[in-house]
Length: 556
Image (cartoon, rainbow, N blue to C red; front, side):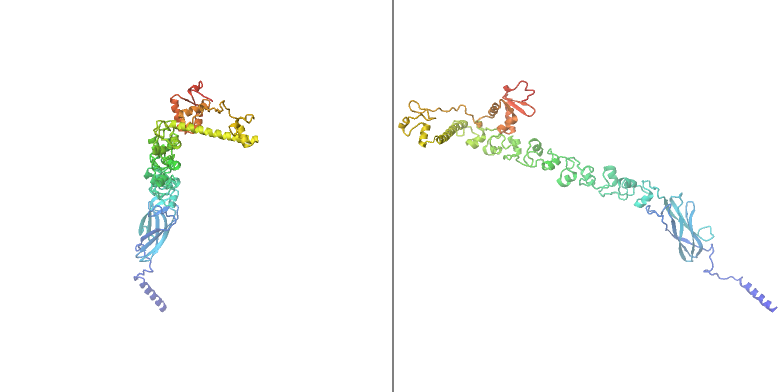
C-alpha cells in the first residue's frame, strides 16, 4: 500500500513540470516558415551553353546544358528551403535545388536547368527565387535578361549561322560587324575579307568601297600590281584596275616612281612620241620634247627626218640637225647634201659655199674639185681674175697633162717593144737599135749598110726629115667632173641603150638617193626625161625613147 502511494506521488510531480514554458534553443529548434528569411545576392551561369558573341548580360544556346549558381544569405537562418530558376514569361520552372542557410550566413547552390524550351527563344527573362519549406510565396525573387538562340539560326540575317558567327567573333545582332558596307556573310563567303576589320588589306580603302565603288580587290593593296597602292592611284587619278592607265607602254608605278612621267598622259612632253616608245625604243627623254637639244622635236627626228634624236649632228657633218632642216635646208642624214665632195659643215663654216648647190659659183666646176683638186675658189668663177674662167684654165692644163701623159706612155711602150725586139734578134745592142730605128752611128751610115730596112723603121720624106701623124683629140672622153648633172644622166642613158633603172643611176653615179631624185625630178619637169613606174622602181629614159603605151604599163 505504501509502495503504491510513492508511485502516484512521482506521477503527479511529472505532470506538473510539462506545463511550464521552456526557453527555446535556436540551434536545436527548427525555424518555422513564418520566422525564416533569405535573399538572393548573386546568380551566375555555370553551364556549357553560354554565348559570348552577343555581348549581352547572358546569351544561351537553346540546346545547351544549363546550370545556375545561386548565392543565398539569411539573417535568422533557413532550413530545408529551395532555390529555383524558371522562364519568367510563363513561369515555366526549369529546375530547383534545396538550400539551407545558418543564421547570419550565406550559401551558394547550383541549380540544374537542362535545355531551354525550344518555343521560348529570343529575348527572355530568367526568374530566380528562394522559398521556405511548405511556403507558396518565395522569400526573394530576382529576374535577369537572357537571350536564347539556336545554333543553326541566323539572328541578324547576314547569311552566317549563329554558331558560325560565334566562332568568327562577329556580332549576332548586326549583319555588318565592322560597318564597312559589306554584310558579314558576303565578306566571309564571297570576298574572303575580314568581317571584323573594315579595311582588310590596310590600303586605306574600306572593303565596301573597294567592292561597290572602285571594283578593286579588298584583299590586295595593289589590285593591278603596277607598283601603286589602290588609294594612291585614286589620289593620282589613275585606274587602280589597270596597270597602264594611259596605255603608253609604261606601267603607272614606273611612270610615277621611276620616270616621273604623267601616268594619265601617254605623251608627257607633248613631242609626238608616246612615253613608252621614248623609254623602250628610242631611249629619249620622255620629259623633254627635244632630247638632244638640236632644235628638232624627238618625233620629227624619228618619223620625219629619220635623224637620231639622241645625237645633235646625226650625219656628223658639222651642222646640227635642226640647223640643217630649218636654216640651211640640207639633208641632216647626209654629210654632203649636194654630193660635191665637201661636207655641209665645211661648206657653211669654212668655204662659204652653198651646201645644196654642187657648183656654188656656177663656173662648171663642182665645189669639191675646186677646193681639193684645182685649188681654185669655189665662190669665184675666175679665181685669179685673169679674164679666163677657171674651167678653161683647168681644161688647158688638163689637155697638156693628158698629152704629156700620152707621150710618156708612148715612150714606155716603145721602150718595152725595143727590149723585146733586142731579146728576140740576138744582135749587138747598137746594131739592134740601128735596125729598129733605121739609123747609123753617123750621117754616113744611114744609107751605107746596104741591108734591108729594119722593120718598124720610121718613114723618111724626100728631104730626109721624118714625118709623124699628130693624134686627134676630137674623140677623147670629157672628164666626168666637167659634166653637168644632166649631162651625166644623158651619158649613162646612152651607155645603157637609152633607158635604165633609177636605182642603177644611184649606184653608177655614186650619188645619194635624194640627189638622184632631185636631179631626175628637175629633168622631168623640163621634159628632158620621163620616169615610168614598173612596180619595182622607176625606169628613166628620154621622151623619144618611150615605147607606145608605156604611160599605163611598162615591162622590160
